[in-house]
Length: 376
Image (cartoon, rainbow, N blue to C red; front, side):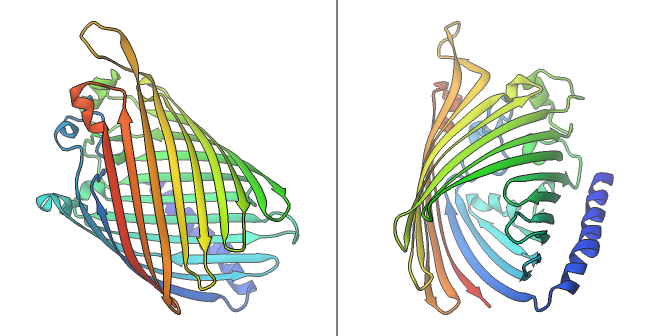
């Protein structure tokens, strides 16, 4: 709790000490507001429920939850951009209502309240700016076990280097069955580079180093599965490498290809793994503000020491997962500042683990969304 209060106090100090002078220096902030109702249909909902039956027995019987989610989001922001100073203040409350599984999903009904502020200072017009950003998000659900605060703070130099601090704090210390549902502290550093080839080609690369430390209020089952004492605090170090190449093919069309990799190293090898991904994105936009985006992804996951045996006493194999994903997203502007948004997201996951109790990892997830956005 003291860490949370310190983060909130730091946020308040940052807004009053740094953002307030910016509001005084810059004249005429631009005020905007938007209102977005949306409904989502999802045949494979996960809420921090582990997909590893060796740690959470409930996932053996209910690995997939089917239902719909209706959301209502509002965004109010004040922005200003001058040659030297720019700022942004934003409030984006949203309400989420879940339906399905005979009322089981009602426990996830909730509200989300993010408050964000950022201040950018450019010492010289042609160089990168210094940006300070802070955000505090409050999430509450019908089931209080999910209620948490998430304050973050970031300092960056243009798009080339940044440091981010994030703290997630849950309201109570009840025993949980997943690391996504306990408090954690994360530090992240990022460096990036960009290569331009004319006005139509761009290559971006980045490297991120992330350290995250978790709390200790986990269920005894998880400690038994990982063979660590109840006082153990999991700590992960993650390395991210990304590279994307973008090419503008016309006045309204562009294509982007990307590759990425992530290596997770933990102080318990039960959570050592690595992932790789390749993607292709095509984007088209019309003069009236309507647009369409298509994304295709291929990803691979390999665990370091989690192995399995197809037959008792037989040779051991390391678990590997792979997935295909296709996403189609579009927006059609019907009149002025009113637009209809829609998307389809299909993910097909497969694992080489042939054990019957792991079969639920061979799934196909389909998410469909439709909404209306009105801006003022």
